[in-house]
Image (cartoon, rainbow, N blue to C red; front, side, top):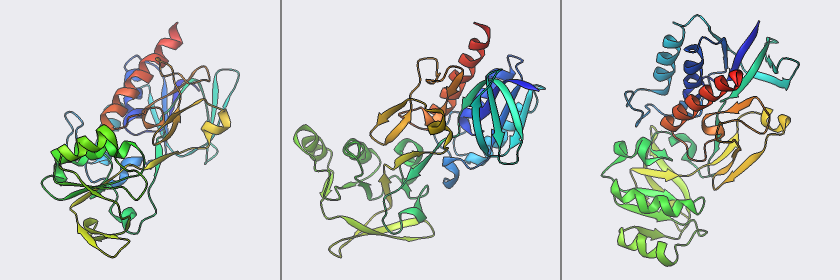
Length: 297
């Protein structure tokens, strides 16, 4: 069978794209290894109508709705190969399953590369987090910290006081200056220049951070902007054009969500400079619509 669209990745973006296409009566194959970036979080917040449900619950809801459409198919597998062929694209899974599609939507997500500080990994997605809109309400009204990883951490430090008293840990690298220093002062942000060397925690709940000079700073939550990495070698193999962001590179797409390879669309965190569950859903919707339009026009 030749599918109209093969979607690689079956989390928020990929399933959102699939919904648009099956409702247009197109033959859609989703291939998903079910290892999403958001698997470390107990709940997804800020997703309209689904606030507080776990990422796995949201995926199950999406799949149950998609299975009501006869043109939908799911393979639970990881993709090992993707190349252009006579009809469009050929996809090969780790189980040697092969499928061909006229179009491909790449929605396989990204990986977070966290600072190498003891305890950060263990609390990630619970009390060490990256997005105040996703997790801020649950961490509200406590002592909060922002661990500087890029210049954007300064902007995050200016936001976090809306959720709790905030300390900005410069790690000795990102010193507030000029207008930003004035803004942080007005917002009541405490500047701590001694680096964090360890996170003290119990059952994924941060209790304090230990500084290089031995001091402990009590915290109920720590915000960290991770560096991002591509979750698949397919992007490099295909030679897709990339776009630089403060957190790392994402795939460059045009206003139709099409990559530098014609017929290959990219959705979700792979191409979104700003990332959240809701933005992934929206990105997937656009990719699905534009992939459908490309089959017509």
